[in-house]
Image (tube, rainbow, N blue to C red; front, side):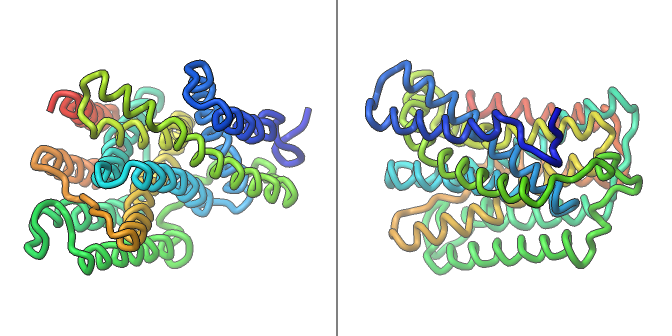
Length: 360
């Protein structure tokens, strides 16, 4: 039997090429119902395969670089989906980036974190993590989310929840710089803040060879491009389904965020179940930070270039949910130990977010 150190599973090699075959058929035969179902399946398969290859690369480079690789890979997918859909739909999708980023923050900070804490608490009663690393990540998340999603509602240069071109440029640059400083702290200056006190047993597993890691890097890029193009084919179907169901347009952002975060969420839950809560928090909070720190600058550049409007400010209801999420997150991460209670609280906020999204 082959091992991760010597070979890749066959499905991870075949899935990217299957996705491209389905993509080619979809462009040749647009609109066929059965084919659209295959496009959806190929899209999900490409996302899971991309994250698998990111995990292989992550295991080669080690922690905390590993979680950073996963976060950046997932965010590249998210940014590509957002930009492709927004450019295709035009001004009517000016709020898609905001809806997707806000959904990512809610899904990560309440959904994924809540499930991790609940699953870990049920299995291990109490779990430990590094307060310094988690608190630093939450502080950056609070700053980024406040500056990019709350502040646009209170500026006076532009009317409404939008920023002027100069303000949008400032928001994009400041988000990128702040995320860059966080990555520097996480990987270089204070790397020990993001490492578990007890060594992870997976560290002793044989890392993949250089050849396998390089192959995974190439297949990862193939998967990411396939995901972008497949999502562009499928996005009109998702929007039509949301409209036919009578759901608010913001639900499209939830679908996109859930799709790209699902594989990483499963990895975080597996880590919590294995009593590696530090890795879970690194994955979860890193994803939320990358979602804002990389998405906002990218869409800012695109829409400053095209001149299209970009809506970033969230409404009053969402602001309350964001403040509650950050407040509860601060209390959760203030002790360095968690139980099922903290998990239940975060999941209750996540349930409220989902319910109010469909019944605003």
